[in-house]
Image (cartoon, rainbow, N blue to C red; front, side):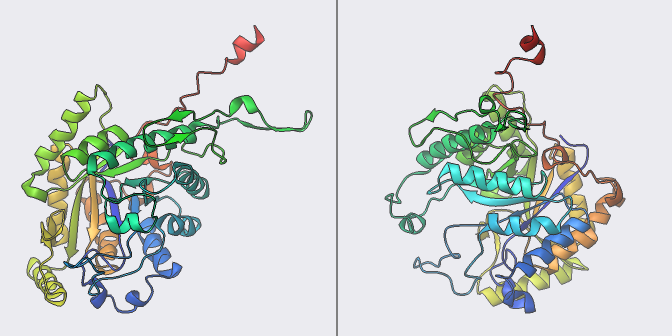
Length: 399
């Protein structure tokens, strides 16, 4: 586990509350502009947040009880991976973790898109891997029935995660030799065939993108129920859990992940982050009133089990610091915070929560924050290519 509290901000439209757009002012008119995303992410970067995740889906927005798009919420979104690539040059140290679904998406495109982001960001790319389970999403592609069960989707996801990893490893770090004397730009022996044949996907050949700075960008997966937790332990570097969902306590969720890791026979203890939906104000009363006003505008309560799959905290910065400290004491690496209002709560996370965590001794000062790649910042070991030992060493060659 990293020796500093990991802090990730989860970005979604005007915020995670369905009525957030109604209090967002000019922001609600800029949700499809690069300026909006750049401004929000640059502020998180400048003030020391470790990473942002960017939500995405094959649907334009939430649906109502009749299965139609819910017109009371933000409808329409930009592609998360493209947004991450667009804002990368404007940021310095923050990790950029777009959501990219593995259902209906070719693993080759997933791999190369994320490798490109890792190059563009100089080693700050991550991947929030998710599956897409609805018939509405399947209908957009027309190749599948859309009634597959979760077990099938997760099995496919495991295969695609494996293929993506192989494609990321397919170029050795030194595959590009630029040997003018022989006229060779690459050494073909240093590029490897992914060579995977599974039940759901079969991929042969190598990536077209040379190995990126991290080798393998860290994979984030949401483990909000038992089958998703098992999937996360199989494919993820960082596991996201949701305290409060289905009555599950933070301690139980962490123990479940550790048990699954042990059952899988691995000695790797993945960083586990607690997902919390947050609305921050100057007092608990003001925060509660602000949430109540949002709920009234939405026509329904936004709470765990009622619109949210994570605890919803309408609170103050000091109270949130206490909650994070308690999670750290349990063994959590940190938190992923879902701001209910953007930019109101995302700004409070960057400008108020970060320094409060420093004061509490839970994070280092911004000036001393690490500038290394995202894997290092998250306390994850460097990615060693599966092909690293297949070539003879220089000593073996000279012998």
